[in-house]
Image (cartoon, rainbow, N blue to C red; front, side, top):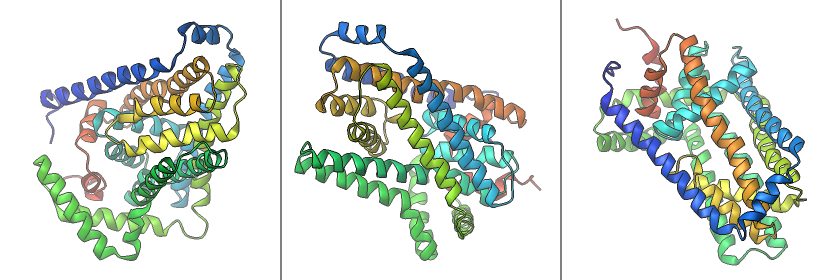
Length: 368
């Protein structure tokens, strides 16, 4: 049990993680600045922004998180359990922010699992709520990326080496996203592989490991996936794909606000491919630096003026990443207090989270 009264080692760890985020933000800014031919151009763009379009960008991003909440609601609905869409959006915000400073996507999934359990979901439902949205959104990002790649290839703006590179990234993301589904067909093999990985991972971290936890997590995943049959996956997919569509629409409105008419193919390439690269660069929390630099390179190479490109990218990341991240920390505290679960404890648990231990149904049972 973690000592919450004197969590000095964990606080130091979280401090270093937050410092890493700040450093990477500085890197992102430095990578963007060389793209500005003339700083006055960007200032002029800001002065001439159409602010009602900026407002629509905020509305689109808010709608994106509500659709994420709808995705979670639909998953709970499959198991005849209830979750308010707005509540689901708060869970999405909170889990993402926790994952940013406490261990990446693993901690984010663990936080979602914990929040859904606190909302009354069972272990099977919470397992699917922590896994399925990310899988579906990765699929949506791959679809947008493919559209962008096709556009660049048709317009002869993509070299063979770049085509090969993006193809490899797509294959890797597909394997990473849907590789777990192999466990549905070969559960024994899936357990052996997962058990080997988790044993070595915990040994590296000098943490205790119980293979029974891995088996319980795998069983919960298989059971929850079977519940998606009969078209039950349609509503969660609508929510996840809708999230990506509205997030992309947020960027479109910012281009409109900047007075630039953006081609849909250019938008798909400039939006999808940087997010694809960020998925590969998992060491950078939130894709900081990777997203900004690759977006700037792609948009300017497609003829978007430097000043407009930088203003739109910074505005998009502010609306879609930084503001939701800050709100997520606040909502994490709110959800934790309402569930009689200290925010500090949630952060500490998430920072030490592993898929097997955090998805263990026995964790929520009172000690005998």
